[in-house]
Image 1 (cartoon, rainbow, N blue to C red):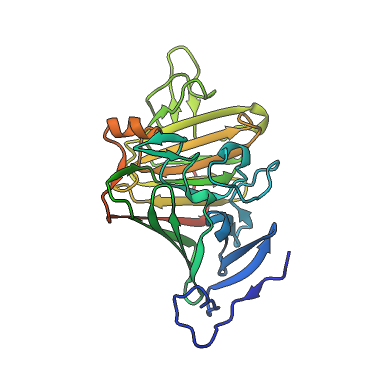
Image 2: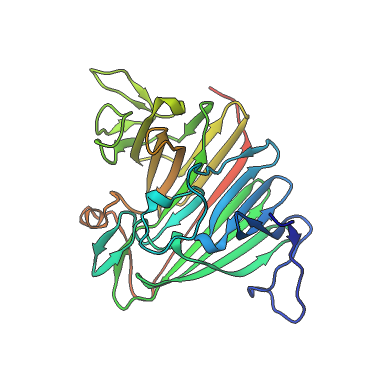
Length: 340
């Protein structure tokens, strides 16, 4: 790994261009090399976030510097690597915080062959801005090729929060349906608890999961059954349990989700725009899926994950020619509050 260096201001170049990279007084943006990939590190006294533009602009590190808790999960048996479009996501998924557009499951839909988990994660993004100051700001841009759109991601780190804003402008001649989803893989331990404001829980695929006593719906966090023991979905099982579950959450009274680490006294919260992403998916694997141990937080525009089914249900996002989809999330790292 190379030594991290501050990004100097370059003379004769305007702010906002890709080469205008520098350090401010309170928050910084620096370059580094991680696993052979150039990264941008946004950092202040409370948080360090590492972004890999060439790998879908994924966040590879999200460190609570005050409590020493690194929240991003990394898969042990899969290295970071460039994956061509059309790759099997499950085979090469190395972890991190990513986003999905314009689909989840690979499908032929509205005249296009849409790749596994969409286009963003295999797209190399261009750095359009990287500046420090009261906040650290990184803006990435990319054009998707299969479902044509001009895309912007802007990371803004300040205090104990990193906010990410998204802008997707259609370059298609006709309207199209799409899915947009967060995919934040949390490094969990048995001392962790999933935290939601409530909601109704149902299985994505009852044949996949091992935790729920049926397809649901159930009221978060308890899945009750007259014939089986109640299941508390907020509890993170040990890796040796080999449990797994994949659920949709709807009807939540507030638009946030998170994880509490009781042992570390630390908490992570993702706040999202419910009018844009009205559904929350949770992918939970406690050793039960490919020996992975993570909880993935997935606020989403759509339900269910199949685009055609979501369109039939009237629960899919849609863009007209030249129209723009915008949304944002804010992830806060803080001390764990009083327990009930």
